[in-house]
Image 1 (cartoon, rainbow, N blue to C red):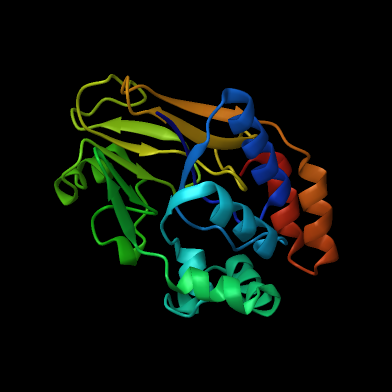
Image 2 (cartoon, helix red, strand yellow; image 1 turned 135 degrees about the vertical axis):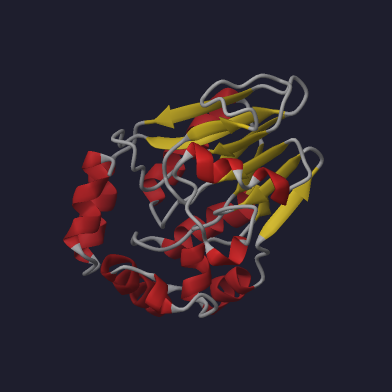
Length: 233
């Protein structure tokens, strides 16, 4: 079974719709979401509707948690904080309740799903370095752990290898960001895992950035959040 693994959608409807179209083109019907469905972008309800319809496993992210008041707002930068407050005023009661019910982590067969890190997932650690990532392998028992949070796609092996994946070994895999990539490539990113063959690949999908950027400005959200989409930063 091939599974699309999405993370950090951040209320970017145009990017999410492009990813869904790519999934359909690839014949992938099963999807997992690693959190941060909302935050930064102007379409929280629309993105939540799609995630609730298309994703069979979903975990919470720090922005999701911030919107429902679990993660303190002091943990967010000025742009994230303004988006948190805006989202609280825009999101429906039904979707707010859905976010409240999301778990910090999920396990399915050989895979662990968590937004930031398997070690202390509620503290939202950033796994930027190989050394920092290596310290997290003790925190999960499965062969694979899928994460997001940094918005940068990367595969880290337990043996210290980077971006070299085989059907054997243990890995922490960052699938990147659907709605706000930060690796210099503005195309939406997600992962595809084949549970039968054990193969994993990162997929990039161009989308109509201007649709989201213009909607951000119209909503009164910080213009910085619109500009960075074009830059992939």
